[in-house]
Image 1 (cartoon, rainbow, N blue to C red):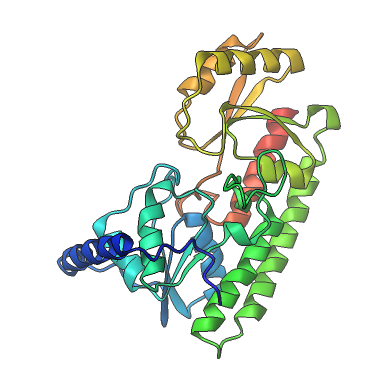
Image 2: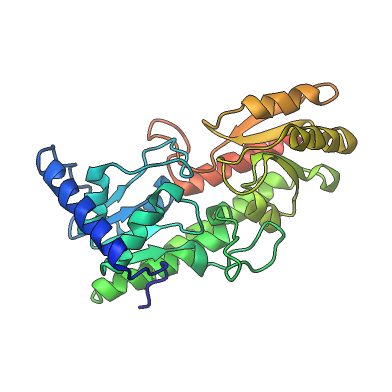
Length: 314
């Protein structure tokens, strides 16, 4: 199977990997190993979201680890040396790609150049730009593909294909079909919850531009975002914030949706300028919650987000 992760076969990338992994393995050998949660293959996923999808497919037939802990902003994450070692020695690395894991890109490039199988799901599930057009050639895709259950289902089959290349004896495709059915049910549940929102209220303002796939799937419009673009690392100007405030006043929008755990200082500034004030409603976007909370699986997370959006907009 062709590796969808961007390949850089340069000597610099290989030297980078050799140095990092050598140090990482030495450090990892001195630490307590994370107990396995399955058997057989070892798979490392960059985010809690894709780790959840992989676990649903492999069950107890593989050990799956999420590089990022719950609540982590994937745009800001930087790996430790032990985590680099875990990726280097895994049977498969599953990433989102499309610029989501900004702090991991050099490591993932180097791993792929050294022969590791790095599966980037985002480029394989019809990614779109913020304007809704094809974007791969321009390298300007919205990375938040998991906010659309149908794209998640497509990603499950990509994971199954990668697993089949490693272990052709297991019916990974059949398991992906089961998970795709779960995502279809999730999508239906979300649509039912969101059906209570009338068309004239189906307008979204977000902390950073993260709900385009959700909006396209369920018939909403993203009017604007506090931080322009698909990353929380942006730095809007005062005129950007003033323009968004004016749009919210003109369109009579009184809600800003943020990612749970996101800094909300700028969102609060915009909300304070809205006539009558605006509510700030947290959603689970970049990460699942911990096991003690309700959004500990992607299906649960998407349903909760749909409920919060429907409730806030009514």
